[in-house]
Length: 58
Image (tube, rainbow, N blue to C red; front, side, top):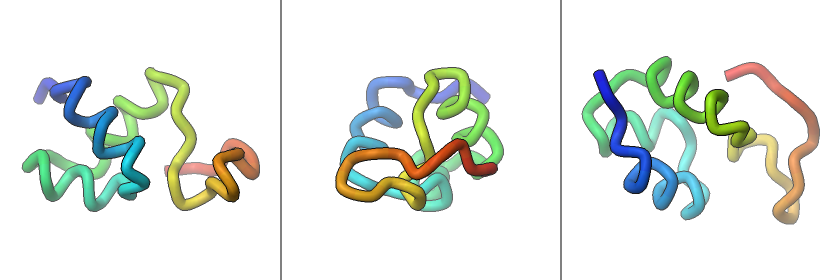
C-alpha cells in the first residue's frame, strides 16, 4: 500500500501517533512506521517540547 505522503505528514505534524494515522488513512501501523522511518521522522510519542528523546522503536 502506498501512503499519501502529504496527508501523512500533516497528520504527523498534528501530533498524531502511528496508530491514529493508520486508522485515518486506512492502512496498517507498520506501513506508517516504515513511511515515518524512511522520512527520518521520530515517533510522536517520544517528542517532548518538539525535540526527540531518542530513536525509539515503532
